[in-house]
Image (tube, rainbow, N blue to C red; front, side):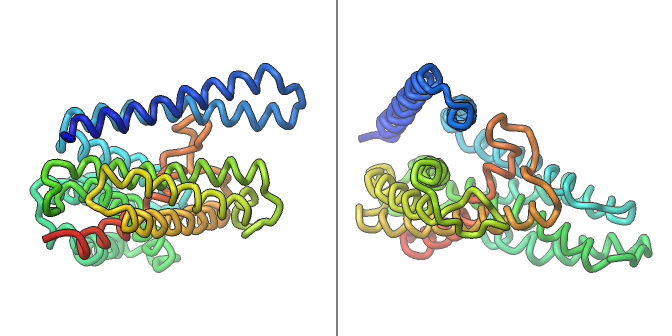
Length: 314
């Protein structure tokens, strides 16, 4: 089966699921009259509509090729960092560091992926970025809360640029007997993470009773977590045919991916709560901001990338 055939069947399956979800959502909206349940169904329908748009964008970037995919994720990092900085108080003394982050670190990080310079891609931000950023801030001689301000900027850059950039970085991996199919692996990782989020939401709404961390994320329940992680692992296993993994390997990779995604969502929910915000933004209707969609990805992508590189590349 060619890459194009695999992509066709994958997109066909996703579109079929979205059609079914849209039909169910429309039916429930018509039948359910209870205000509380109606609000849940309306939120679910808004999420499904947003998924139509997001799937279309990712599909188009896949068809346009490697450069389009890298540019897409560079924009994702840009908007995610903007949301993070918007919620995080900064001062005039931080503006040089922030300008460097937006207009140097993002383009350089993604350019390194484009030219497949792995050794520099992995250390550019954690080493050079982390040393230069506070150096630019200290020149202003504004020492008030300097450590806190620098740490916030560096943490934001780490999760919104460095971690997210590991998604398109999957395109540079040299995997035996998988040449030209890396974009499918990228799709696989994103689908497993996002399906896990959806299933955790659905199982939580249907069966959720026991809160995992009510102060951090009131909507996350033990039942939702178990249902989401099992369901996403099963689906990830079933999609082994678009990956370089065997079914058993796909199950292990999917399980680790959804587990890290859950931790990412929980950690970044704690960050939001500490900043007094419910969502990172309003960019994606029904989902919040860009970072609300990428919180799980930011934790799962680096782990998925390095596990794949260590165990499956030549």
